[in-house]
Length: 163
Image 1 (cartoon, rainbow, N blue to C red):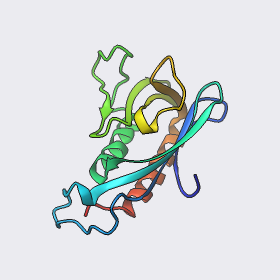
Image 2: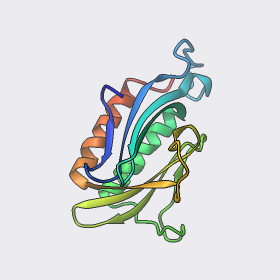
Image 3: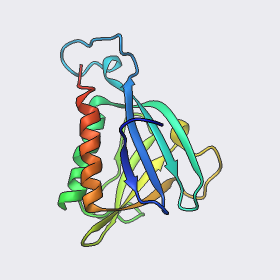
Image 4: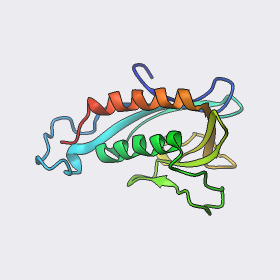
């Protein structure tokens, strides 16, 4: 995929680039409330790479504008420490960030002083084209790089406001 993207992960490990392409229905202007479903679906492009270097791409209308904003807010919570890591079994104070379409979901796996580990769940049209033993990428990145990735996400989302 080309253009600006939110890049999660590091070279040599699992990573995913997410890009807001456009509204699913750009011709719909919305009802003025910002909550019209059809007007606010976003097409998201992704390039994913597993820990062992296998990669795939996807293109799917899998987030609404408000869900995309929620993802940015959730990632800010990872950075600022207001979210706590969630064990893989789902226990603890953290949670799975899931959306209307089950293609993408996120959970906070671990944190050190300067790095975070995020589970990125990819399924259906966004999942890999081969069978997998687990349904997520384990993405590690420096907190400073995550902060920059959030800024990229916010810029893409600013170009696609609620309609």
